[in-house]
Amino acid sequence: MAFGMEMKLQVRLSQQLVMTPQLVQAIRLLQLSRLELVDEVRKELDGNPVLADDHVEPKDPDAGNRTDEAPNDAALESKAEAERAREPDQNQDIDWASYLENQQLRQPLGASRSGFEELPPIDQNLTKPSSLREHLLWQLQMGDFVDNERRFALLVIGNLDDKGYLDLNGGIGPDGEARPDFTIEDFAREAELDLDDAEDVLLMIQRFDPVGVAARSLQECLLVQADVLGFDEIEKTLIRNHLPDVERRNLNAIVKALEIPLEDVIDAVQEIQKLESIPARNFSDIDERSIAITPDVFVVKDDDRFLVTDNDRGMQRLYINEDLIKRMLRDPKAKEFINEKLRSAQWLIRAIEQRRRTIIKVTECIVEKQREFFEKGVAYLKPMILRDIAEAVSMHESTISRVTSNKYVHTPQGLFELKYFFNSSISRVGEEDIASESVKQAIKVICAAEDKGRPMSDQAIVKKLKEDHGVKIARRTVAKYREMLGILSSAKRKKLY
Image 1 (spheres, helix red, strand yellow):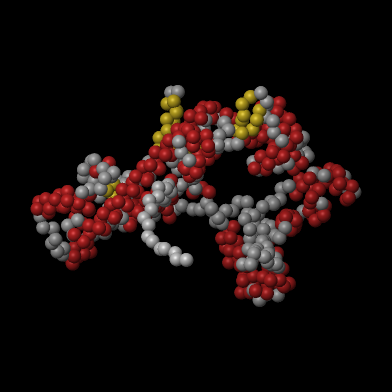
Image 2 (cartoon, rainbow, N blue to C red; image 1 turned 60 degrees about the vertical axis):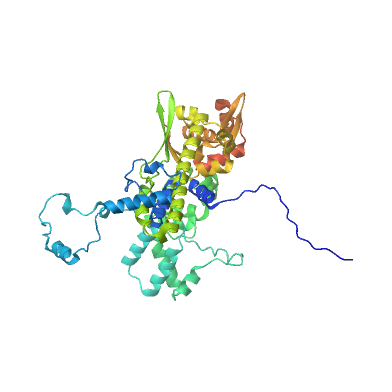
């Protein structure tokens, strides 16, 4: 049986989505924050000679707007020939020796001049808070330690967690299995220090400022502080043996166990509450005073309308540098290079402009749907999801997610991230649904106004929300929102005096 082999030409019609480099660039720019976009533009300006920012304005006032079409090569060459005919010969040698000699002969400014010229730059006068590690290293440097003790101290300081406790967790190995926890003996062995001396050095570090740092547990942290501050034996006993009862305010159990008057227990608890449970509370690796959020858009009320405007301060306005293109096109070998850079510049300008329009369009839609929030505050925030905005502006939900990530809006109610306005809904009795963020705000207000001697339980907050706001919510949801707000449980919020 013979099989025939033949060649055929078939035509098929199919649809497929192709991610062009330009589309990938537009999507990437859309999700960048403002600072990241400024950095990206700066990189493009350094790598693309065709691009120019607002510091290099084109001579033609309409040149910045004519970025939709590439200039015609023949037109640019003819313009270049005309310019070359009119320009004088500027390729003259510069006498650099004479120039430098004149610079050296210039008289320096007098040292006795008064005014701000005498002061150092302002950035040299600025200070920033030191981190906990820097603070401890400074104290270590001032201390009287030998080399192996200093090596051990460096290991301890280098293994502190964000709260200032000594982290001895071994972590996860390359094979995914948990490693055994470290011990003080491991640090002492690596520093070639005797174990007894290592314990002494650790105790000295724990008495650094802040007192209690490098403790291995809350109990050890409080005991170090109690010893330094001269607490009596009753208070130290509470820390050693009854810390859970102190945390739960179960004072009757302490009275029964120690057989002492309730007044003495209350006085001891009051003193223990003055101790610091987080040694690193006043230290941070990030200087929060230097962090400033620059809004991408502004929402301003004008009579009965809310106007949305973009924030162009600090953003370079990009143009096509036609003068440079004309000069470089005089070299025939540069045509291909210029055309490639020109197309890249045009796509970047279009992508940035499209990003700006999209952010404004989405923000306008948010303002329209959350008008009561902009007029009255957080309590009037409505439930809203990405699909609501996506359908209103005829975009995909993923696009809305990229637009609202790391973008901030300045409103009459304050500065908010655009993602803040997207909330899940919580049903209300006989009324329209309310946003989860509004419920969190209501819980915060309820806890702030409660009787500190008899704080409300989560179930009582559930009842209060239903009575005052018509919100029907489960107790576990109240507990979850309360933890998100950083509010302690009712037992821990109770004031005994």
